[in-house]
Image (cartoon, rainbow, N blue to C red; front, side, top):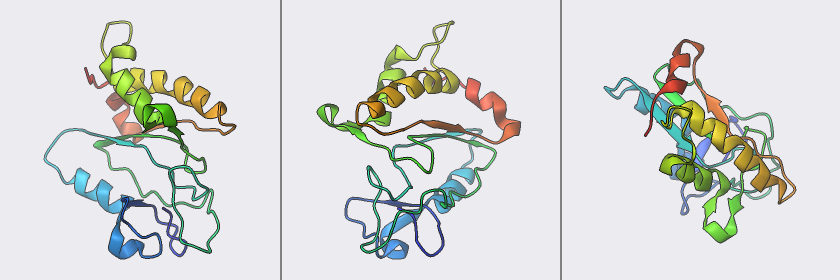
Length: 165
């Protein structure tokens, strides 16, 4: 959910309250900071949510309007690579018959091996290359645009080549 006052993005659990984000949700900026503090070389984050506030897997406080294009996702630290379900202005949606968001469904398929590259490995980049057209096609069946995003800081471009499987 986007905070209508600060435009900050929050992760809201099923029992969270979009009218009380400070007490019932978790700021994406704080998630990134905590993950950046881990004593690891690289962290890969996968987020099947949308922050447009326009529906889908996003929630808004009653009486507020979507904030498409105004969402503050924070700065991605160097050691993080993020795969997100959609652009911040898009709605991410489910594949009802699979019981998952389209992004999660194809993420799992890709990790199971459908996203292997030419050498037989699943890398962050090959997973993204697999996910993108699959999720876009699934979204088009419901008359919406949804394009997964692969986000990383320029100096960490090699992160896209990290082998996952």
